[in-house]
Length: 310
Image (tube, rainbow, N blue to C red):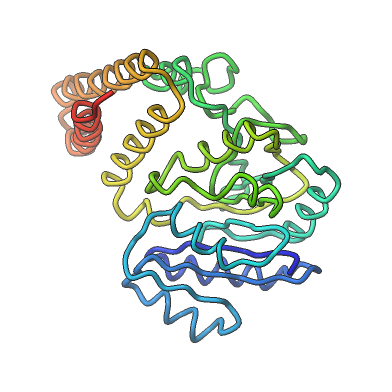
């Protein structure tokens, strides 16, 4: 098998159908298998796959095991020389899979490659990332990354300043679509399952780099990602999960002192937003309902840091 496509799904029946249809519409020239790993969906996703896409390999988990673990299950069942991890809220565009496979064939050092990512209106979506550092965390916690999005110095982890128009080696790529070489996967292993969702792809890319492999952005392939997947169904919960995953990442890859500073920066950022939001509720009572929701989210994230040890 040349290519194995893994799609992890959790209650995104309509999006999953669109995703599979896009792959079938632009079927690559190489031999391909599609594996859907369903994380205990209750919206009829599994039934959809069985009825409408009988050629797809369906793996049904009894509950939501998390993004990383579900992908690991799918990868363990795959047979392709390349494994492509695709979010259910992604649609493949023409020649994406063939172009990525061809690109990776020509460079033996590339472990992971990612395509150009578009919003549904075809505007560009940034997908290249820098590894988290105290400076990137500071820029994001105190709003510098929002104020100076096009600045390489202040933009935080997201490379908003990069035009995404040329091939580039990057620290990590957005996890909505990753193509990985089997040889590299066998050497480095799958996702760290301690990450339930978020930060697992950053940790994964760091492990590949440490083993001498490369992570590369390739603009000669493209997808559409509409950000309407599982996380949109419960934004508060997923905001908390993101903070928990970041804490796990810092515990795994950074020193005690760095973790103390990281906790301090993030806590101060959330506390500052709570205080500013409270003041805004007084000054702009017409926006109180919307602002109150943001305050609640930052309070929940702040509690995560207060309850975690270094």
